Amino acid sequence: MFSKIKIQSVILFVAFSLISSMAFAKGHKREAMSYFFLKKTDFNLEQSIQQLEQENKGKVVSAAVKMEDETPFFELKRIENGTVMEVLLDPKTKKVVETSKDGIFSRYSDEEDRTAALNAKVSLLSAMEIAKKQYDGLIVSAQFSNKGELNCYRIQMVTNQGGYTILVDTDSGDTFKDARHDKKGHDKSKKH
Image (tube, rainbow, N blue to C red; front, side):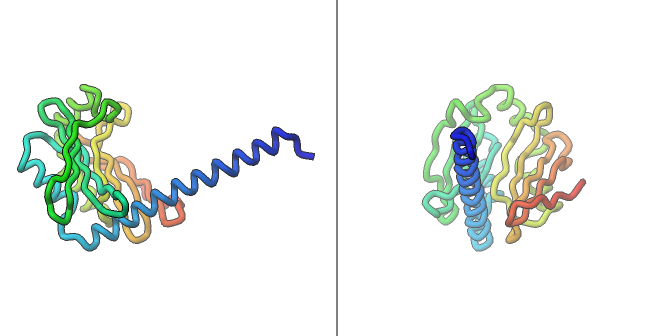
């Protein structure tokens, strides 16, 4: 007979598995919605970065398609005078709909990370171009990231077959990682 502890363990495992698969499915749904939105729009993340950098002082260090109630927006983070500002841009009107100071728990709340992002030799736009030249797909997010001692841009791309992430070194522009996943989450990595 199963003991009470074993039954509870099985129940917890099943519950955790269900929650994990729901979160995974939600992430894939968001990726798919972003992909189909980007396929039909004439204004992309790169253009939103260019627009924001031309209109405002500051350097964009993060850009992503954000779905709110199945309505797409571009969420950009820029560093201006040492402050990280979050900007929500409507891709249909190409207008800023909201600007706010990024929270204290932001990945850019640390001055060292802000300084590294500002001093990157490769810009976010250049990193996105590097990614597009080497890989098929549409960019749904790109952001400065500090992976241990490596400063890089983490670029999320999607195709109609799934999504993958590549890292672009902020100093050299080299790509370091390509973690590809098909619709079922199977690893389809290619070594570079």
